[in-house]
Length: 107
Image 1 (cartoon, rainbow, N blue to C red):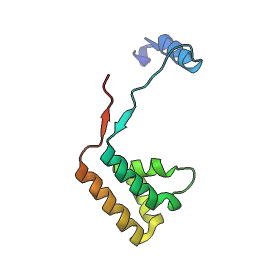
Image 2: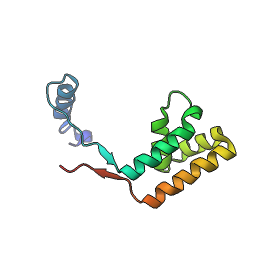
Image 3: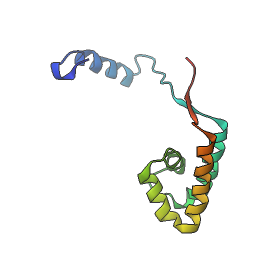
Image 4: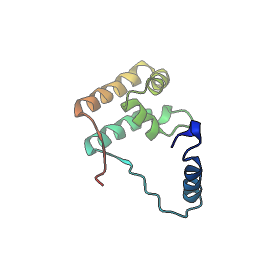
């Protein structure tokens, strides 16, 4: 597809319409999170749950914080206060020691 030359655009629009109208099967390969990281994320979620602003779900914020997203970390640091952030940061450091926690499911 080359959008600037209008090549493949018609096919792309047709594919989008088929998926939107459920006329074709669509099964994305979602990443799988290792069990040791699921445990860390659950611990982090428990700490941030009462401090996560709407419309963000705590699970989404915990995942973003674990991936090092600065905006999410800054938001939670401000909302948790110093003592709460120290607890959350300890959990995040533990997650880094676990190593990469995301892998694609096998085809």
